[in-house]
Image (cartoon, rainbow, N blue to C red; front, side, top):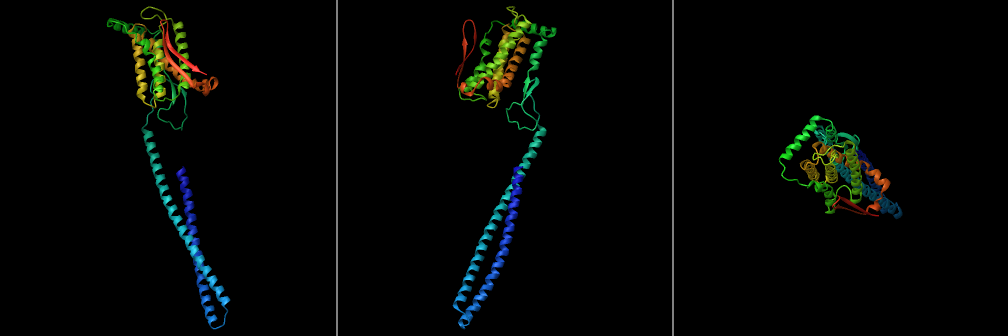
Length: 356
């Protein structure tokens, strides 16, 4: 649209320049006729002066008028030359603008062709939640288009509470693993924090994500709170017995929820840097879920539901972040933020320190 508007402006300028050269041509022709008339008059009075029929004053007057007329002709010729140069320059701009418009139209046609071949797919299964863009907006690579609620993961977990077939699959997987297990690995107690720690570690190493430490901490704490409340309330409501019979708080898996929460956070923060960072985070989270089953601490449906809760908590945290940041925090309070893991004989977790 700008190029077409520029073309109209250049066309108007070119027409004005053409008109100017036409006016100069007429003015030069008129000035040359006056020069010829004054030259004849000057010659006539000079001859009269030789015959003593005129005076030197009159001859000098005609000579001055002739010189002024010649000067006017020269000035008009210079002005016409400048106008013609302007016509040439504007004509070149006109050609360049035409070429620009043709290139832009070709790009638009190519974009339309590519759009006809484009299929937008979601990175995961789920229900469409919050939509962040409207029809007609430009979408950049890695931009969040909509929020997907991981409904399949959570749905399978919930169905598994009552489905005899899923309960049977849980037991089959447990028995199959227990038959081939020689020893247990408690790596899942630590691996659940790896994606979360990687989010801060990459930032610390100079690989910048979408948010700085302070904003990232607000999002993480919000997600952790949502995830923790959801997991613990659900555990107390469902009272599903663990596979090893140690307690009745199996559903959903808190370790898996923590791991997938960190993986989704890592993916969102560093997707524009490299998709493989998020993939690696999800691989670690999936491994954490596997070892919860391997160590006889959770059923498969517990792990699936925990993964869904972890992902959903991060999605909700990003959605709530603008309102929370605006209401409770100010940028100047988030300059000194430090996150570190802690571990004791009684508990493990993350420690957040914010210096106000």
